[in-house]
Amino acid sequence: TRVGCVQSKNPCPDEYVSGPIEEYMTQKNGETCQQIAKKFGVDVWDVIFLNQPLYGSVLQHQSWLKEGTRIFVPKKVEQPSENKFAPKWYVSRENDTPRGIAKKFKVNFGELLQANKRRYPELTGNSRLMEGTRI
Image (cartoon, rainbow, N blue to C red; front, side):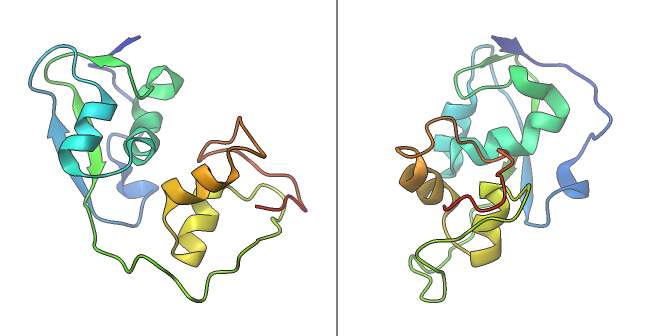
């Protein structure tokens, strides 16, 4: 899938993200979100989440981007690797998302998804969970 040069209602993720972000312009045709995430040392799914309101569901981790495409990337913030206050299991409320749960308990989003992929193979950061889902 090729993505780029798309206008949107939300030109900047400041409206839906509270953490610090950086703006990156692709340098050549064919760059992917996965390459950009690796370059910045962040999770590819965070890059996709920040940019989905701009580019919609066509933006995937291996989507080829056009040169000059504006991509938002989370600034890497050093956090303690273990949060002693995070519960081992969380029982979701209606419409909770894995991204929101990770933020709520200050746990690594990628690790939360990975830990639950076996039980919920279709799970993404924006998945709306049913009330009572154990994650």
